[in-house]
Image 1: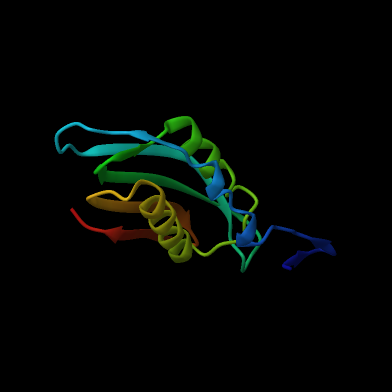
Image 2: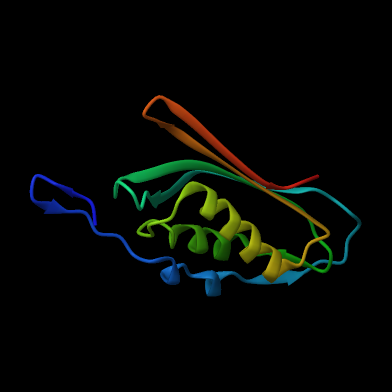
Length: 127
């Protein structure tokens, strides 16, 4: 664990991510793009122990299921104490959502606040 002046920063392992919070509801409509955005996302850098703040953009074309928004919010909140690299986070979001909603198309974009003068954006999936 990272340390500063004799103090230890702690964070939890990825096993504590609550993908089980995700719920869905049936979708039978025509093809459409659904886009969710939040700027209230936080996780923990496993290298420094400091918080990572990000804008998360989720875009998908549903097949038979949509993700329920309150469950998505609780799922995203479960990352607040998790030590996870930005690239791994994008991958995790993509695979958890793909598994639960099985969309026709899915794209996850994570745009992190500038850290150390470096901007970081990760994109997984395409439209």
